[in-house]
Image (cartoon, rainbow, N blue to C red; front, side, top):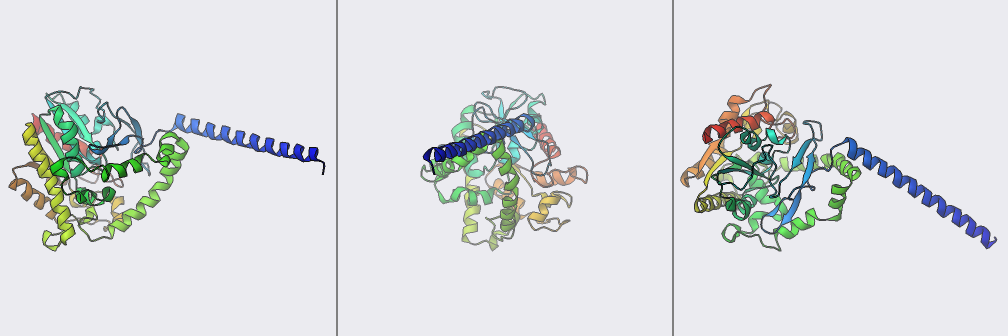
Length: 381
């Protein structure tokens, strides 16, 4: 075959490939622009999280993201974080104020499922009280990271009062998160996570290339969001079958006498973190008050209807045991720590048409946030 014919065909073939690639790229660009124009983006959580050596991880300063329900359980929520990494409140007050009140906890405090004005902190911010409020919630936080955040970032703000929300999954998170916080037994004494232990893992988790694509590509973000839920449900179902106290929130009512050595170690480590925070608050002249978040299944048979199926509860099951609350209350009383048990209030306020928790997501509904805000408002009058 004539070489000129070969080169001509090859040239024609390459041109077709390039044209095809160009068309494909234009199509992808059009889809990307369309998704960004008509759907919330960027999606959390990688958008707003960053690794830090002092607190392991927290929100990026001045970051933005959207929380989107996998089942349309709540409207897409716009999440904005200020220069300190705290969720912005609609009132826009300066956080550097001696009359500040800090709300510290995990995703229940951050409340990504509701607008900022419907979070506990947001409701209180607009209640015409004499305080400024700081939403220092961060999803996945537990006593370890909450202690570090208070020590390194919150104490210097000299808040008047610190409300610590203790979640039923705090024990499990101390056990599970990134190799297990409990393995650094001296963390509450030294107050700094070992660089080779937690922060390095977080850097690998948040800064890998896949997460860069998730944060910067709407196409990839929504594809990952669509497929993520099936994988997560399989993990939840596996955890739900565990009988270990430190493995699943479902087991928080396990009697201390029935725990093995590892389970007791997680229990003691978690309480040690609360005690260390109480001591730190005392030194800083900050009044600490703990709110005990109940399991949805402790409230009534109507709460957390969809979530029950995933975690192996019967549809109308109610958990009558309150070992979880009583054990914490005994600990608080023994150490002079103020507390509020939310279970009796939630039982009173919850009903068929007024749920304290979201049916699938399991975090506080707008009603749950309002009930808690009402409790705190009466305490702060």
